[in-house]
Length: 117
Image (cartoon, rainbow, N blue to C red):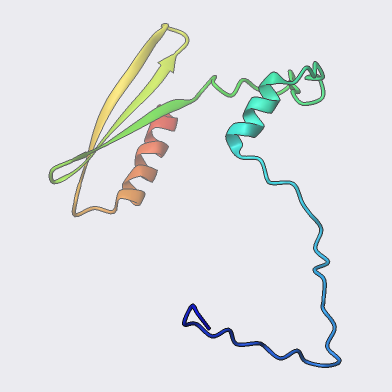
């Protein structure tokens, strides 16, 4: 014992068998960036089955409007923008909701009022 260390031997258990792992080797999952790159670089021209257009349904943007919600001191400002096809102009309106009122209830009233105009 010239090194000064002793090596302890571990006794083997008699009758024990070694169990081998039976898991399948799976390939690594692709990240979103890798999937997007593979999709963009693929040579598949089969887009007909993935994109369908229903020409019998009404135009979704025909009577829509936009809500912009801004936080302000003492309440919330809601701006609505609606496009008028007849006059070819955007119609804007501002609504102020104070902190003492329920925001969800007041938004419901604003949406109902804008749809009736």
